[in-house]
Amino acid sequence: MKSKHIIDLEDLTTDELTDIIKLANEIKSNPSDYSDVCRGKILATLFYEPSTRTQMSFKTAMLRLGGSVIGFDNPQNSSVSKGESLKDTITVVGGYTDIIAIRHPSEGTAKAASMYSEAPVINAGDGGHLHPTQTLTDVVTLYNEKGSLGNMTIGLCGDLKNGRTVHSLIKTMSHFKNNKFVLISTPELSVPQYIKDIMNTSDCTYTEVSSLAEAMPILDVLYMTRIQRERFSSEEEYEREKGVFVLDKKKLLYAKRDLKILHPLPRVDEIAEEVDYDSRAKYFVQTVYGMYARMALIKTMLDNFDRNEPVRVFDTHNVKCCNPNCITAREKYLPKIFREVGGDMLICKYCEGRNLI
Ligand code: CP
Image 1 (cartoon, rainbow, N blue to C red):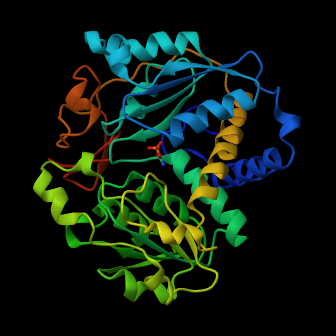
Image 2 (image 1 turned 90 degrees about the vertical axis):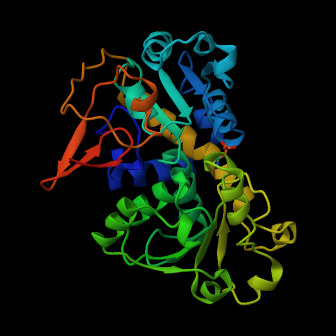
């Protein structure tokens, strides 16, 4: 395994990703063979933001592997409420446990946590940035439900701007041959430029459309997403966007018979309840694949990495990231680390925000 931490699914090679998908299926088929493989190991789940699926599937995954779990699902019940920094929390928890899953509303938090943790860190969602274990869930689902991860026309619908599950999924599916993306959103919620750049430099093509009904007949996969109230700066902005795209039985009349409908969940009103009874709806099955995907990931990471001293990181530039939701805006002591692109562009290594200099 090339990387100690999973901040982005790009931290896995395609071969490593394939091995984890196969292991998830193997565990699903023979759970008793894996019921003791993590005995004596401890997972910390540090959730600074609400979660049902990710938090509970991580916990269930570790318990089903014979390990134990500590953590919090509300930072107000921890010393974070007394003003403890991310660095100090992670330094302490990394010393107690063997592996950490962290979710946080600020972009780049998992990357920041990895810089101070003796234990391997998994990104369980960082603001509107990435959600790699949801993507792992999605690819295990697609591999099982479609039989491969290439040659598909994949519609992504809803909040493509703030939807971290969308960003992670496009990044990963761009590595597989002949995938086509159909991006279905309002202009205000279209995918960020850095995700378009990834598609532009891959073998995959994309189109942007504003009608779900129009896109429906060509799709092999439809990935619906929620308009995320918590990512909007004003209620008015949220009210303008919600309810624009709703999948119902009528729209499915024009869909392929073997379409697969995925959703990371939770849903609000973007999929009508009547769709749940259509055999093409896979979003609840997807949550079960997610538990096996996380079991496979935890086992693989623990087999490959023990706790070790984190390497100290220093400023690369004397520039502040311009993304107000970057973790560096909240945790001021973090080193300022950027990747240079061209003459006047710096990419923040935490949140991938673009900074002109
Ligand atoms: N898919 C997902 O991240 O769901 P939760 O927010 O419930 O964890």
